[in-house]
Length: 273
Image (cartoon, rainbow, N blue to C red; front, side, top):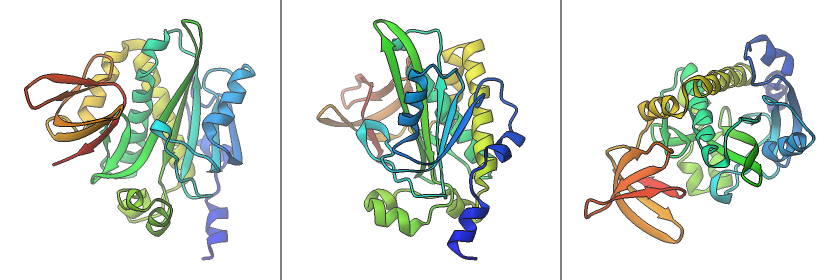
């Protein structure tokens, strides 16, 4: 089968996604684009124009996809999932970071739904056999001390070829994988997208009804770092220690050599064992 025919048969379809979806808030409105700079950028424009909570943007490719800490996200056409979802929670900006945990849990659940065991590396890289298959990028808008909205963006490597990952990303591509490679079969992108959106909706209501601790408890069950030695790069410093898990605000705690627990708010973490 030619690549063109394969892509055509597996094209994202709002109709096919909706057939498999029964979410209450997420995906109330779905926009599907062939290419955008990033789904987060596209959804930000819609949010500023008054888009309601649950509005979802999907794209077949991104010309400037982004991950955490300003890193790019490799976004070839027609093989993966690139999605962003809008939330307008009645919380303060300081409480917004917990929303990235909602997205991480939802992606991990969707990955597990295709028979692949997924774990989460703080803050929200989704790993299978220590290879990265997905990432979460959250952004927010505020007016003074009021939160206007949160946008959760995800990128999931579904059917991309390993050779393409390595060619585009070098060493980072060697540390990544696709679900097709891991599951040994093509992944139905419409079914996977519906599974992710359903799970995102469910975790949103867990947070709304049971608050952040319920999310963190579930996240800890999927955490790959706790108890292991890690290297942390944060604000120009590099240190090593043993991961202790996350605190009530979702920050990583790392025990340094002298036994002191250090809080990591934002940084890069690498497993050492």
